[in-house]
Amino acid sequence: MSVLVLNADHTPLSVCTTERAFLLMYLKKAEIISATANKALRSVSQSYPFPSVIKIKQYIHVPYKGVVLTRQNIFKRDNHACQYCGSNKELTLDHLIPKSKGGKSSWTNLVTACKSCNSHKGDYSPEEVGLKLKNKPIRPSYVMFLRASSKYLNDDWIPFLEHKASA
Ligand SMILES: [Zn+2]
Image (cartoon, rainbow, N blue to C red; front, top):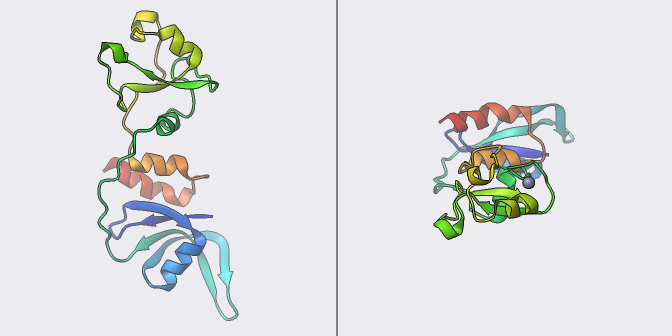
């Protein structure tokens, strides 16, 4: 089970294990915000709710958490699918504006493309060879990645994640 960790101002910080969440609460560093229904940790004399969202009591200053531009992170942003044909085989990175024409390696100029679309596109822009992008490439936010990288999305988390996304 994963637990969403909120900063003192309720913005999402990270995801941790249930064990770590219990430890933080035990140390009085965090408090429970939302509990998993019908689940409890029982000791001899007491029963403790299972946290799904906890909040750190003392505000932690976090330097801006950008997402690092890597091949894997671009694949992740694009759901491991070619942005032209949707294939998930033989994925490569494609520069929308080709490098040879001054295209940069950036979040907005790189997309996931399968080998076949990439070689079809060659040194042209997508329009020039009649390829259409499924999604406009964007620079992802940290929260977006938090959502994508949690194995399952706990419903309890959604209000907190959306809170940050709209801010
Ligand atoms: Zn393709």
